[in-house]
Length: 213
Image (tube, rainbow, N blue to C red; front, side, top):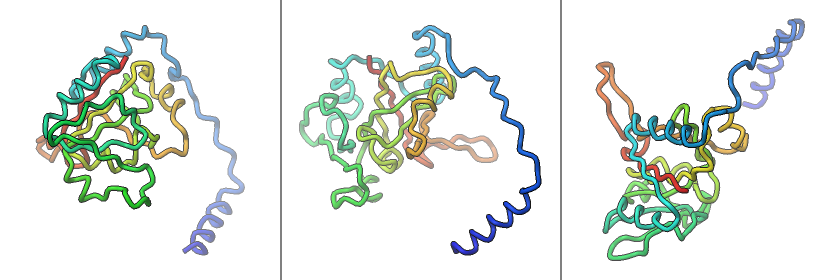
């Protein structure tokens, strides 16, 4: 396979060797925002609500209570091993957190069947783009493996207010280029040829975004 790939790439290079270099890409679009912070946050909220996500505003003191309300009394939920434990409610009754290691090869890493059996997942986030209503997860220790945010049916995502930007270029500037990026714009949804919306096909059917600040 590698020999075939090498041959294909060599042929492409040979076919292109006498062509002029492409012109530099024009970058006349906005790359930094001049909007007031509160306007940017309100834009993000508007986009997320339009995408049928639920948005909540909390402080560090009120966050555990909000997450407890969102989980319910009997939820079994998964959290990445690097998540700030002060965010989580006290365990009571059947409600308990299952910690997933960031290394998928670890013996305690949850498989798809196990993740499908939990009620929810709680993660942090890297950055959020208000213009498109998109939350970026990049596999950091407090965000976990991509699987834990895609398999459970309910995702509670904590977004720090100081991580909200207006534009995609601003968001991408805060993303490690080699990171496994997951972009979330509302609950997973698709539609058929008659535009009938179906949620939960490729990820959680329910997305709760908690703006923390």
